[in-house]
Image 1 (tube, rainbow, N blue to C red):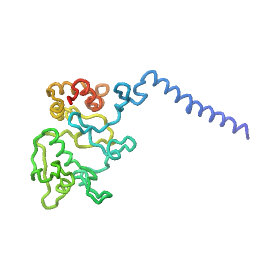
Image 2 (image 1 turned 180 degrees about the vertical axis):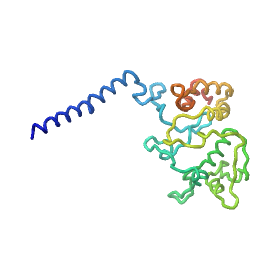
Image 3 (image 1 turned 90 degrees about the vertical axis):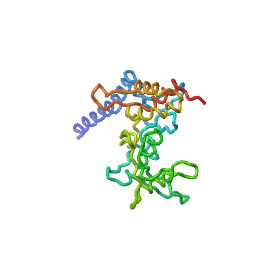
Image 4 (image 1 turned 180 degrees about the horizontal axis):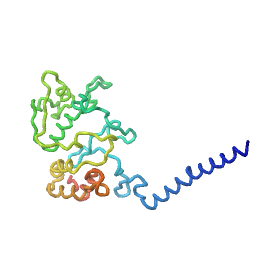
Length: 246
């Protein structure tokens, strides 16, 4: 019996050591030598501080920065909860958004929706638009837009709010990626935001456009994927070349 069992045990022990120890260590060592940056998470540093990764999106909301794609990862841009909205193209929630009641019995935004994203994208970036109702109707006490009111208006069965941009809106500006963590935006999305960023930093828009062009990566190996701009890298370049005057 042992003459039949022992060869199998030896093979199992050998393959365990080979594939479970030797092979992973060898691959790790090769990667650390050949691709150390990628093997260690493609980390981005500022001085001695790690501020992010080239592979994971971060949220930027201030006007002097380029904004990333929308995210449904956790509460947004959560690397521990990667995922999309999982809403279909005909979903009313995807198109018009949804609200919920919080612990304090206040209505808050549960999901913003594409229409609401288009509204904010147009207003933030000075894109002309047509609206069936004046947006002043949907302002809160502080003068900002009340997103809950807008979502209710989009869902109004009798007279829904119709809002349409007069210029093309890049798809990636108002839709999230499957992971919710795509660190890139399209060059068209970056260029649409350029005037806002230039104005916030008191520089010429041509300077910002050139920075976008210099930060644009082409398709992998010239054929795979589309041109793209890494938002974190671009915003770091902004701070380096055109720091905000405070």
